[in-house]
Amino acid sequence: MSDSIAYRRGAAWGTAAMLTCFMLINFIDKISLGMVAVPVMAELHLSPSEFGVIAGSFYWLFSVSTVIVGFLANRVPTRLLLLAMGISWAILQLPIAFASSAAAILVCRLLLGAAEGPAFPVSVHSLYKWFPDSKRSLPVAVVVQGAGGGLLLAGLLIPLVNQHWGWRANFVILGVAGALWSVLWLCCGREGPIGAASRREGKVDAADTAERLPYRRMLFNPSVLGVFLFSFAGYWTLGLTMTWLPAYLENGLGFSAIAAGRWFAVVVVTAMPVTIGLSLLSQRLLRGGASSRQARVVLVSLAILGAAALLCVLAFVPMAPARKAWIFAVAGALPPIAIALAPAILAEMVPDRQRASMIAILTAVGNLAGAVAPAVIGRLVQARGIHDAHGYELGFVCGAALLVLAAVVALLWLHPDRSKQALVRLETAAS
Image (tube, rainbow, N blue to C red; front, side, top):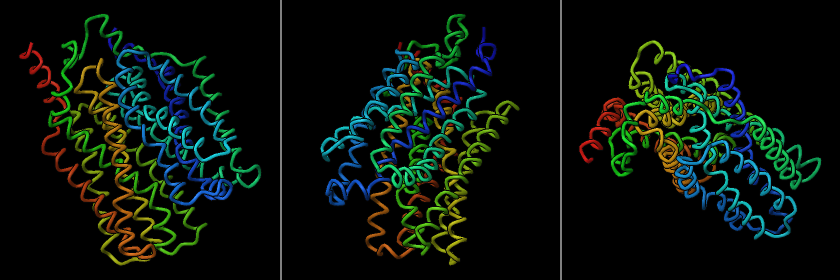
């Protein structure tokens, strides 16, 4: 049977729902230590720099493990890999809850980062086994919203848990949540039929006519590089939002701590329907006969160009703080579509058997932007002063320049169909 026949709507969306919960837990785990920074530093007598080292340890092995597990996912069922991640997340929360030293927390966060790094690429690879190419945009966008849901829940619930039961209780709750998800996945999680059914009947995509393609040829293909730049720009914007937006709202624009928290929630909530809506539009364009370049590449390019324009308006047009917050909310809502659709564009061009590793490399490269962006903006803020809004806004303009570059490169050189055929021709000639 073909991929369209192998598609089972109920089971596919059930898997998407479980993976959305998986990503929700993932992002609460990521932000949890930052949300309890004040009581942790007070109880363990940590300086800000010492706490910064502990918080940063989460990312020391993040990208490395992402790539390693991505290659492993080419051969090992995603059901098992996701189960192993869920169990490890649950186990690693508990030592943090009972830790009496900074070193113990550092080790646990280091291992937790390594365990959580592969979550997104393996989840996407798992989803692609349930949805054919023409239906992949929306479910990935839904799973991406698990991240926003995690940030919202963390912001709402962690302060309440701190107040009633202390900061350590958060990690007990997260451990229980990870364990419950793992049990449910063990009972209900399955490997999708898409791709496997086609290969059994010889109905494979053109990119899979070769057993495998050399990674060097794939990674240096212009279209693949364009997708990587898309993802890098999207994660850059996400990184500056998660790291510097609260400080910009409170110190730069002068909102109170409570008002700044509410505006941060507005930014997170605004991104959710925008990403879902653009993904649904992309999927409908594909089903209506549009090419992938039109339905995905051009759509993402226009979205991030719009975001870049709004970020420049924010920096150079005088306006009231509330209006600036609204403009950032719209600008910040557009780039996540690049994160949602980049894996689908990449998956078109590479063999199914190497899809997991390529999406893992894509995610690892993107997360480097999430690490670099806060540092770049931090220098600009320090140079202008933490209460000068223009220092933050100049950092936003740097992000706008990167978004423009990614869009221009994509519009000029990102042609998924052409690149897919070119990669196969190169491998055939080499053989």
